[in-house]
Amino acid sequence: MERYLIGLYKDDEVLLNAVKEIKAQGIAIDNVFTPFPVHGLDEALELRGSRLHTVAFIAGATGTVLALVFMNWTAAINYPYTVGGKPEAAVPAFIPITFEVTVLFAAVAMTLAFLKRNNLFPGARKRIFDRRITDDHFAITFELTDDMTEQEKDHMTLTLKETGAVEVREKDFEEEGDALDED
Amino acid sequence: MQEQFQFSDRAKKICYGLMGAGLLGLLIGILFHYDTPDRIWANLLLNNYYFMGISLIGIFFVAVHTIGFGGWYTIFKRVTESMGAFLPIAGVIMLVITAGAFFHWHGIYHWSHPGVAKHDPIIAGKMPYFQPVFFIGRIVAYFLLWIGLSWMIRKLSLQESDEGEGLNQYKKSKVYSALFLIVFAVTESTISWDLIMSIDTHWYSTLFGWYNFSSYFVGGIAFLILIVIYLKKSGYLQPANDSHIHDLGKFMFAFSVFWAYLWFSQYMLIWYGNIPEETVYYKERFANFSFLFWFNFVVNFMVPFLVLMTRKAKRRMNLLIVVSFILLFGHWLDYYLMIMPGAVGEAAGIGLTEILVAVGFFGAFAFTTLNALTKVPLLATNNPFFKESLQHHT
Image 1 (cartoon, chains in turn purple, brown):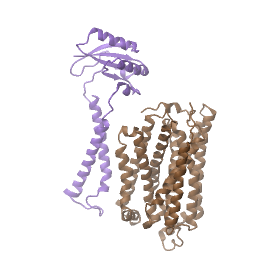
Image 2: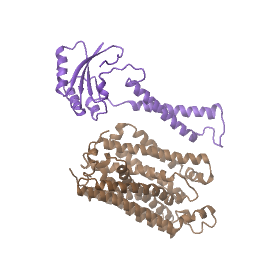
Image 3: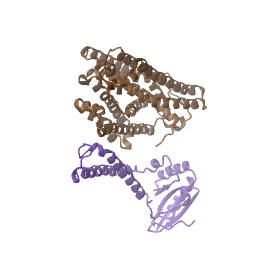
Image 4: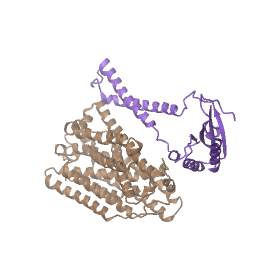
């Protein structure tokens, strides 16, 4: 079982300042949930840049190579065939298809990587911290470990309240993902 | 919050030096290539056309963002407006070049050679389009429309600065921006047929106008980046942040890819169709300009594509300066390959005169842009999008 402390905020500016304040106090934030992208939050959380483009580049390059190799194999090696007096390995004619396959590979791979990384693929077990974070609330979550003292927990709760949280609560999750929220 | 750009003596001296180099280049051309005057004329056409395009991109950039509710660029709006200041000079030089074709001062246009239509039915069929009055009238009309509309757009923007808050000028500038875009969409295509495509008179390509546009668009953005970074490094435009630079870098990257797309489209369709009337263009370039032909593709596509691919690269100002200079040269080379094989043929080459004249035009263009900037407040603080631009964050 895993236990989380959740602080809910009503305003993005307040949230941003709260994140900076909590970071300054040296408390480790587990995650922040917002209903829309908040500018400057990435920097405040000191997140590493997204690596999605690396996936896109590798998948795109794979697509380029596969498309060129496959067309060359079908048109010039396996069944050489002359079309319109052009050479069998007519590279300019292959380029549009190569381009499309590159885009297809990159786009599909990016989508899948994004879904996997964010645990959003169909059938994934989701941890729902609070239903209102997709509407008008912002949440900062902290993982509570067994070796934490009550004093530490109280301090975190107090910090959340001081930085403008409208609600602070704890929530338990089963080890294997979790069941749905009741409230 | 307001700034006033001061044209420093050092920058002025550099611009004068570059312009002096340009005149020296012309002199060298006249002294050493007097037997092939076409080379000098074609050189003049090449540079004048290229910088005319870059100048137009400044106004195009403003117009497109005004119409599209683009706000992020407002902080350097004055720079883009000032880029249009070169247009009258380009117009005068262009008139001299076109007049030269009809008075036979030079022979860079095949159709202007006396008696050529008699034995050549294809050119005879195209002759109505090359009637002197119609031809020169067209060129004059293009420049009058461009100068008039860019002057109006700039004037409204300056009035906005004087008169304070309000949407009067903004609404009017939408009308003029829309007009400019319509005019530009047609005329940038037709002027590329008139001045560049007609050099290879038999040949035609239906996407030539686009291809020209994409080429000087990249050149224009490269120049804009250079000026914005220059201003930022000399202490102006401090609110322009990483995100503005990043977005300009994105523009340069994206339109380099667009250019490559058109470069390839034009080549592939002609290669596939294999009609002698069309393939003659590439035959000439493969035979005598094969190295430059492929080098052009590497410089203008591979370099920006691979160098500017990452987010970090587009935010690094020093790297952007280098890539901007490479692309300014690269698209100059692109026009070189469009003009020289047809206009000069085997006498063409990149010598001292080509390099110096190009440098001279760059200096003249930088001078007119910066000079126009000194006459206006540097920040368009009354523009409705100014605040949005200050907070731009990607």
